[in-house]
Structures are given as structure tokens and as C-alpha cells.
Image 1 (tube, rainbow, N blue to C red):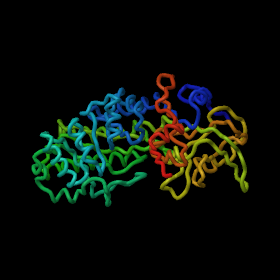
Image 2 (cartoon, rainbow, N blue to C red):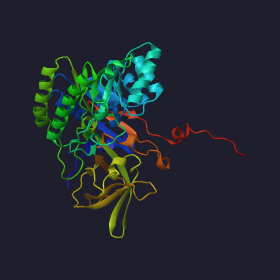
Image 3 (cartoon, helix red, strand yellow):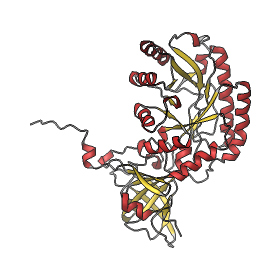
Image 4 (tube, helix red, strand yellow):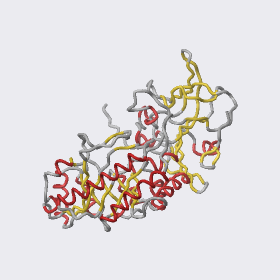
Length: 422
């Protein structure tokens, strides 16, 4: 079995020698390809916002902004990340169901668009904006009464902490004129994530655009912006198929064009995170030991689910593997089933269950979990057992660049305060 021995054009051995393992490596060329492949085809009036929650690394954000992406954030740290990455405030939207007063105040001072998720939050925004002598630019997040199937995680059509129910908004005629320091300017809906069926995304988009027009008329909102969410997926598991961008856009563009004909001055927004960065990343771990237990083979590595919780199969009844392969060398050995585990003292620390890898796997080999550019370390318990954060590297124009330093003992203990209890 022959395996490639480079990532992003850089030999894996060089990456490991320079940066060590465990290691996340992101191929900037893949990120650019994913963004441009959609941007070049999509209706020119649609603005693409990068959802930092997928991968909040500041260099990843800066790269996507250099390509033309705007930014959607959900925390103060993500907001500051966009500022330092050079994203103008008018190209940033802040969402989340539990925003703090400090977060809201900072957005109001900076001119960041707020996506409001409850009527109580709307009252608070009005109060804070009034105190600052400004008028808040607010988009209402709507929890529609309908849901569209085909998502890995459905977020519409059922009770959620996100957004304001469509039915509740329909009981608020004239809402647009109730807050003197708020300008309601549009609507956002996010119906789910990891959509892999083009027709479902098109149906979502059509219904959200229609919902925005209906609510605009009912609430007295002068429609300036509609955010149709996104949720574009990545195929991780056997039997799944990646989205076809040409097929998707061929169906989406007429929907956007018809809406633009009816509303020529309204901005159209799509959010995406996983779709832009997921394919670009690999999580590289080095084998420390190989062993057998009760007839099963184990490759014990230096990294595990503390860095890559998504690979453990959270939310699934059956463990399904991300694409996983030997990275650092070619092998002609027949593939056999290996359990790829990490260094944690928990049986759930398995990043590959019965994964097909060469039978001659040995200590020192580097195994890569592919399609790991989204929801990697930041969605994982990186401090469990105090192993710390892995290093992150971004390959840009053939050159690997360290974009996050690896935690060491000193950095992990720096924030702790020791008291003398003698």
C-alpha cells in the first residue's frame, strides 16, 4: 500500500522534525481553493462570512479575509481575533444566545452588527445603545416554525436556546418601532449544520428568504440584510459524499437572483466555517508503542481525543472514523485493523477504531487524521490530564509557518496561583 509522504507539498518528516507532534497542519492552498471555488461561482451579491467557531486561529482568519471573506464571531476573543487579523468592524457580525453586557457594549462602540437572539436581549441592546448615545444595528435571529431534513445537527423547527420563535415574532406587529436606540435591519436563520445534500441547502435558502420578507412586512422592518445561515457540510465517513459546488450553485443562484429582483438593495449573506477549512487540516500523531490485547492491535500515540474530540464520534451510537492513514512513509504491507489511541487514562481516548493501516506499523510512524481543519483543538478538552494544546502550522505558498505554539508545562501552570497553606 503506497501512501503520500507530504502535506501541502511539505515532507511530513520535515514537519515533524521542525514542529514535533502532536501537530495540526493546515494547507492554505486548500483553504483558498475551497473559498474561491464557491466565491467564483456564487451569485455576486452574496457575501461570504467565515464562522470563526470552526477554526479561530488568527492566521487562518487573516488568510480567509485576504481572500475576501468577512467574519462571524461568538465571543470577545473571536471579535478581537478579527480585529487583529484586519477585518473591518463593518464586515463582522456577532451572534450567540448568551452575550454579556461587555460583549454587547464593545460591539456597539465598534459598530459591529449584532445578531439578536431574544426579546430580552433586544431590550438590553436598546438600553446599552441609549446609554452610549448610539443606534444599534440589529439583525434578528429567527427560529422558524419549519425544519428541513438532511442536517447532521438540526437547529430549526424545534425548541432551542437560539433565536426567537417565528410564532412569537408574529405576535409582535410594529416591533421595529419600539426601541428608540435600535435599528432592526434584517433577519438570520440557521437551520442546521453538516448539510451534504444540495437540494436541502437550496430549500433552506428559499424558505429563509421568504420568511425574511414575510417578517419584514409584519414587523415593520426596513429590510437591509438577510443571512441564510449555511451549514455546508464535509463528508467524513464511509458512505458520505462531499457537496458538488457547481451543482449547488447552479441551484442556489436562481433563488438568490429572484430574491434580488424583488429586493434590489438588500444584502444577502451566507455563513460557513467547516466547509472552508475542514478539508485543509490533518492531525498528526506519532506512534509510541504497538501492542495486542485480546486479539486486537493497538497503536498508542502521543495525541488523542484531548486534541481531536470530534474523532471520538460524539453524538453517534457507533464509532465512525475520520479518514486516517500512515503519513510519514510508504508501506507495501497489507492493511489490517488497528485501534489508534492516545496517551489519556480513559478507554474513550480512541481516534481510530479498527482503522485500516499497514500491518507493519511501528513506533516512530506518523499517523494522520485527515479532514481535521475544523472543530479540532478548540472543540476538545485540551487540558485533560494536563497534556496541553498542540502546535498548529499553516502552510502558505509552500512554506510551513507556526501559527500557534505548543503548550509546555510552564505555559500551562502560568495562570494558576499557588497559596501557602502551611
